Length: 325
Image: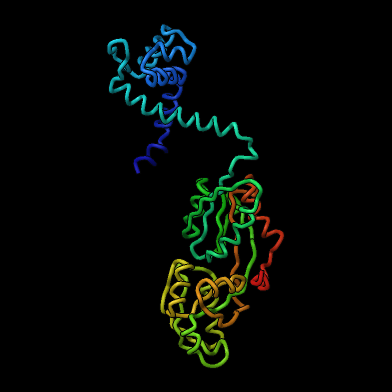
């Protein structure tokens, strides 16, 4: 809480700015080399400066810091407590600068590209992989950072530029001036699944054979859940909600162990059956799982995000026959 208050305080920002203007980074760098070498003479050879010049620059930095940074010890120098603290910060500054310099030597097109993605917890993980796949197939290396959670929290991180894109099946209502843009990536009908021991107990045709059966639902307000429950009602079928789980993969694990019937997009039916050793009970074409990407603006600067959003442009409707791909 304190950090937020300090960061948002104009007086604090002005104080930090004044400190940066007052601190001479050349003097700090020369001090850092002297501290590392332990001698003005050796540091002077590295920096191609006379010991007298270095001594005056260290003295100027001491004036800025308000205290001595070195004490004479024989023919060498020993850091004071203040000098040790300043050296610790200087280590971080200049080691980071050296790493940046090395990174800058690599051509831009050869540098790994960072992709920070927020994935709604209600999206099936196999679907998330398919949505990310176009970005991971780029010739340039992509380093992926994934965060899962509820869409509203992910959008907050997107607005703070902690994320580059949010993948969701729960399209937010975006104001015209929100700064976000919604990209539809596709949709899939839903399929119902059950463990073999449960499936073998079901008698009669689908979907009437689901009457009174235990059902597992997603607990993060995924749109397909309310649509499915309405579909059951329209079919005159009553199911018994046995579990509410906020993770799509965990629902499948529960389903694998026979806790109840569960739903997943038809486009990943083969993978769900293979990975979780369950059986398909039937397809619900009336219920669609729609998928979206949310970006910060209409203009996308990250090629990996562009590749993800381009999938929706090229393949607006994800057809069920993709299951066999």
